[in-house]
Structure formats: structure tokens, C-alpha cells
Image 1 (cartoon, rainbow, N blue to C red):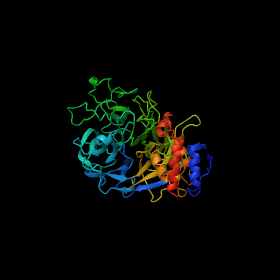
Image 2 (image 1 turned 180 degrees about the vertical axis):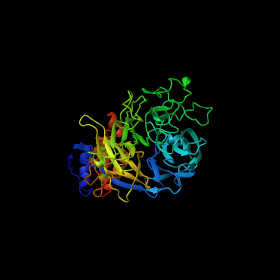
Image 3 (image 1 turned 60 degrees about the vertical axis):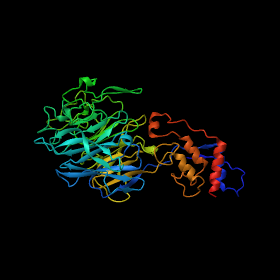
Image 4 (image 1 turned 90 degrees about the vertical axis):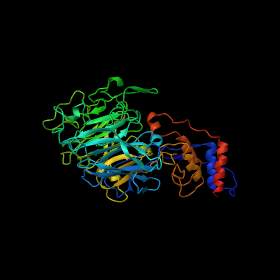
Length: 549
């Protein structure tokens, strides 16, 4: 319950209306108590882009909250010479730019190929660099195609256009056209590029192009398949190799924090392993199609598509030293993989944090089943009630869930949230990505041709501009709306939802000043709470209200 005391002052009603008395009284005396949050939560899906050509992923460029970049898979489908586009959605106007940000030609989108991943450099605003994960033809016999990680640059002449051609960062071959992984992203603490790779296709990590006796995913010698790769795109340790334009992360110190090197690499660059396992960060994955970092904790969440029994969510804490073995092909979810490739749990096996079964499993809630997991991301947007809640989906079952990590009060919980995600228009199907924008709002990309924002109707009191931070920028909204007595909204500066913008709303802002998802995790304030001179502030408020009467 919101408790607020208002004090009236003897000021001529001819000068101002009643809101001025309340504004000045609250500002001068500050006798108010406010809740930090209002009750609400998930409030449906809002379509933000439609009529897209097989969209695969949506993401943002660091430093720009006004745009969402949408990667389309490629056209025509099932082609060895497809063209894929990256489109720009203007979040301020809701319009999709008719001119692609970038068109990539010569792709092979057969099977599960095409434009699969997109990530912007942490310093994109200054260096204009971004990266894609694509599949394209190669010169290797009996191969489906190869995966290429490429670097592109934003045009200096027009920031809404990129310059082809791209520069190859690394490449590896794919023996079959499925299980290509696809997600790429930068670690929020180390700044390295993480690359999810599948086991190479086929089934049970077996057949032509698959290492024996244990499969590609368990092979950590010169084998990039079934792995999490981790590279430094700001260095080039292979100056004489045009196909390898990256550095190997080695142990280093960043301020007062130690950043671990890759677990299979030697401690120094001078000892680089020519057999090629230096790039591996973790292994034992089947098809980690989608993953995501928690921007507040640096925890890594991985959705790994199963073979025929279980779909799994793997979790790597932000302080990991790397080297995790997630078990494939020996393990599928929490169980031994059925059939001849299964094996009792290896000593170094890391179990998933959650797995779910296929439809029709006896004794299982049908709403908690599926066949193709789509990993997502932990929420760190403006809604304080959803902080840290992990959103993920199943593309075949068209289902979306949330997962809450265990805490002091309860164990791990998973909730089916489709009933709370009714779309405002359309009937989207086949969710292939859950990702975020610059301020942490979440979006679901549907292969059927659309992107939807997950709507929430809760905000932190004082976060008037909805950027997931209570800071000085919010005062612009408050001062602009000051004195309004009707139709007041959050954007106008109405923190307490009482229909007007007054000193009470300023005090709510002051109470929560410094809040953001990052400071909420660290339990430290981003800045000291401002202590304005009450009389000067009151005079300003009174003048502003009187101007509106």
C-alpha cells in the first residue's frame, strides 16, 4: 500500500491550483513514504516488426537504445547461393527501414544453414565493428558447407548502412547441414566473442565427419564442433594466416579483476598449441542453437537441442574458469543418452540446470514438453519484478517459459507463460530467438516472419524514461510533466500513478536514485542520492505549476 502525507500551505488560490500546494508541501517537508515498485508483470506480446523473410535473431548495438537489428536467414530457401539481409527497426517510430543495413550474398541456407547469428562489438559506437555467423559453400569434398564468422564495418558515410565485403575471423567445416549452432555474443565482463557450435549434424554425433570413439563434441583436439569457442577479436595471433584473424584469450588482469584465459590454451601466447584446441572454452554440446549472457552477472545460459529424449538448459556462472563438459554424446539432459552412445556420467560432466521431455511423456505436464529448445536470456530490463528471470522457448512446440534460479526461499521453478503472452495482433509461430534491446526489454523472433516485444506493465518508481535506470535523465520527464492533473503517465513523470505529477513523484525518484539492474545485483548504489536545496526546488516547482494554470 502506498502511504503519502500531503501538507497544504496558505497560498492564494488565485496564484495556483491545488496541486501547487501539494507539490510545495511535499518538496519542503519531504514527509512521504513510497513503495519502490508497483504491482504488475508480464502483459502480453506487442508486434514490432512483421512481413520479415524468415527472421532468425534480433539484437542491439551497444550505446544505441533507438534501434533493433534483425537478421533474416536468407532467400531463396534451401539454396546454395542465397542472400540474407540485416534489417533495422527504429524503436522510436516502430518503422522498419526499407534499405537493409547489410545484405550478405553467396550463403548456403540448406538444412539448418544461412545467416544464424549477429553480435555487435562492445565498442561499436567508436569502431563500427559487428560480427555474423553464416554458412556458405567451401572447397572441401563431401562437406555440406562451412561455418564462417565474419567481421563487418559500419559505413562512415551512413551509420544505417554497413560496408561489404566482410573480413573472415575464423571458419570450420560442417559435415552435414544440421546442428550448426549459430549464436554468437560478447562476454559482458571479458569482452571476448563467444561462438556456439553444433556437433556437425547427423544423429548421435556419428557418421562421416564425426570423430571416434567419442564423437566431435567430446574431442578437444583440433575440433571446433560441439563446443563453445571464445576468441579475442581485438588481436590477431595468426598474422600469416588470412583465414584466422583473432587472438587466443590468455590469463590477464583487468583493474582488480582477474580474467581467465581459455582452459585448453597454454598460459602464454608463446606456447600456442598448433593442434587448434586453444579456442575452446567449453564442450560436450549437441546443437546449442541459442544462448545468452546475463548482462548483470555475466552468467551464460545455453539452450542445447536434444536428440530424441531430452531438451536441456545449461548454465555457466559468470565467474567460470571454462572447461565445462556438458556431456554430449554420452549424456542427454540429466539422463544417459539412449542407445549405444550412452555412457554413465563422466567424472567431469556438468549436468544441465534444467531439462524437459518430449510430448506424450507419461506423467508430465504437456505444457512443459517440447522437441527443439530455443535458449534465451535473463531479464534485466525496466521491470523490477522480473529481474534475473530467464526466458526461453521451444520452437517446435511454440511454447515460452520462465525459469527462476533457486534462492533462499524456494528451489528452481519453471513456469509456462504463453497464457500471459497473448499477441496484440497476429498468430506468431516457431520462436527461434529470445533476445534484448539496449535497455533490457525482451523480444521474441518468430521464424514465421515477425518480431514481438514482451510487454510488462511494472516499472521502478522514478524510471520515467524506461531505460532501466533511475538517474538524472529522468528529471527531464518529471519537470516536463510537473503540474499535470489528468492523463499523467509514467513518461510524464507520474511515479505513484495517482494521476498528477508533483513533488511526491520527485521524492519517489530521489528514493530510488541510482537503481539499475546492475546495482540491484551488486547491492551498491551507482551514485549518491542527490540532496537538493529544498527551498530552491520548491520555488522551481511552484513556478512550473503556476505556468500551467
